[in-house]
Length: 217
Image (cartoon, rainbow, N blue to C red):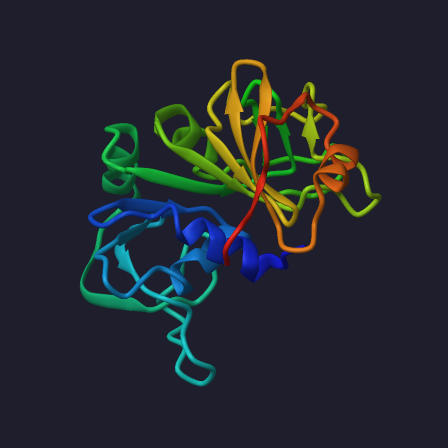
């Protein structure tokens, strides 16, 4: 199965030349490290930067240059900085081609819960609600199960929803799945992971059509 960097590497294959991409906190922030060198991509963060680069090398961090998750980042040549109002105008105006988010749960109809666990301290929803309400192409990066081994790909989310019917694709440590009308369509399996492993780890309706290829990462 994949680790967090492996998930990010696989998602990076979904990023196309000329895309404007928003990266959520957690695993999605790693995607910027693995985008191909032969394509031009602009990474946007809702705290006000367009043109984020990979994470900085140890010792070269700039404490004033951070992403929405308050992690230190780098800026590529030509990067621009602006206020949050301008940033969210980009998001709400549908100027972002791809949004990559983490999630605590995803339902088989594309609902996403990614901001609150009842009884635990959280910082708030942040920009996630605007992103899922406006984005037309949302990929979720997450582990297939929680720490208790329970599936995070469900028939129905149990946690408070961030968005309804908005997720298009999911990349986990076990598989790549597409959300279709009937449930989760299994597109690829992680190296060393069997279709049976994925069945056991998926509570929602898992759809298998023919032979499932092993993903390349």
